[in-house]
Image 1 (tube, rainbow, N blue to C red):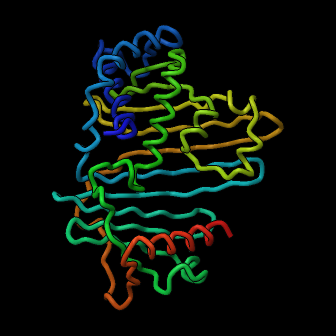
Image 2 (tube, rainbow, N blue to C red):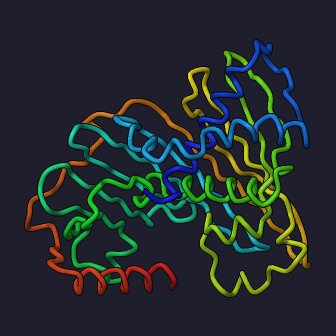
Image 3 (cartoon, one colour):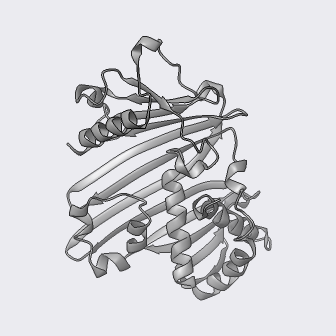
Length: 297
């Protein structure tokens, strides 16, 4: 399995080990700076090679991502909620723009059958991406084996990738750890904005990446990972506001598990006459081309 699915659970296991060490009271600071790097780094090295399959164990859960990014006067803000339930598993992802409520893209991959579905909001239907709001297409050949390739956790996996890359580049990226109320533990890692961009936490157009100079690349984006006493992930947040190279940036990405999923979290499909069928890769490529043009217009 690739490194991407491992990353978020590598950090999760590190924090589980951190929270298991000692009996720190709520709000107690654990080692900071270089001490934290040594303290957590040793645990990191112990578990990094043992978690290649950990992400596949997360079943029957719902989660959410709130993503905000602003570069000078240009900004985007979206929310993504998702659910995975059953065995074999069904998955649903709901993407909503906070700038335009009609910008909706939902995906639904039922456990049964050879196809998955996409629901398009009014903006995309009006722009001719599809004659109907619902579209069906063949399921990916890889199926649902690699969770990090689906929209429910794609961005948090990239957040994790960037955090791991920051740690591997400089152990001092680990800036602090502390115990919270109810036995929770939080770790903060500073991620250089250059790594944030390289790992595509937010995919930026060339018109913006060309403006990112050395000052912005070095700017720190704190990543805070919070775990329950049992080591399960509570939240994963990257948040920063900074300036450099003559530009102002602000961002906040907050991912969290929100509860237990069931088949009630899966959408109801309309009559087959209201679903546009994309039978093969060529039709899918043409659909995604039109969707990309609509999103960029």
